[in-house]
Length: 113
Image (cartoon, rainbow, N blue to C red; front, side):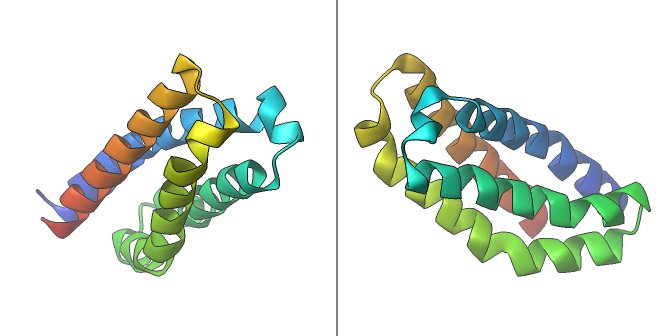
């Protein structure tokens, strides 16, 4: 896979992360839970940082920025996995956790190819 194809695939996977982030941000639970707010803010920060390089089709800048944001991304995923059962056991939150984890792992897989 070329660097451009990898960037396109990773960006497509980030669309799933964006939907989880949007769900969390607009949930009633986010109004009362600082850690949940931290998750959606950190996810936004990761995706926002990648936007300019993606828009410019600058694969070198994109992957450099992704490298800088991997730890923050991982920590946000792990934090959500840790707090999700306390925040809500509703199917929507359980599926959001699964979706976020799957997107994260696939992004890492594509990046490492």
